[in-house]
Length: 79
View 1: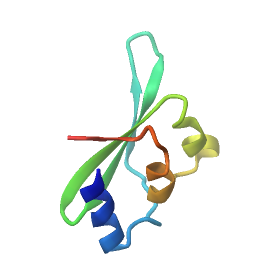
View 2: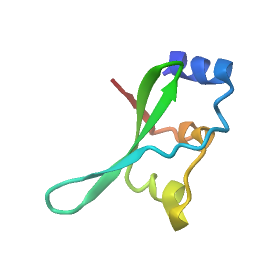
View 3: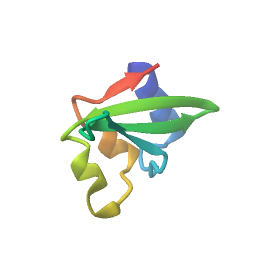
View 4: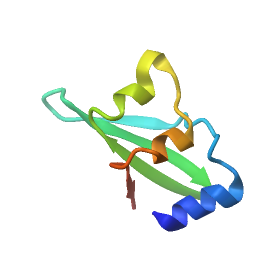
């Protein structure tokens, strides 16, 4: 995660709006969180924000900034 944070700080992408996202929903229609896809220097990174912490990020149809996502302590960087 430290390398990812270093990359976005070097590229100045903290204020970038993240538009590529997917909700994680099981077969019983329960939402477990959201995966945000972030592209940095030709590499794709996936950030998972568990439920219910993803809900304020997506409230009223808004798209979150990358810095809003990485400020959440429970965010996970997926491989």
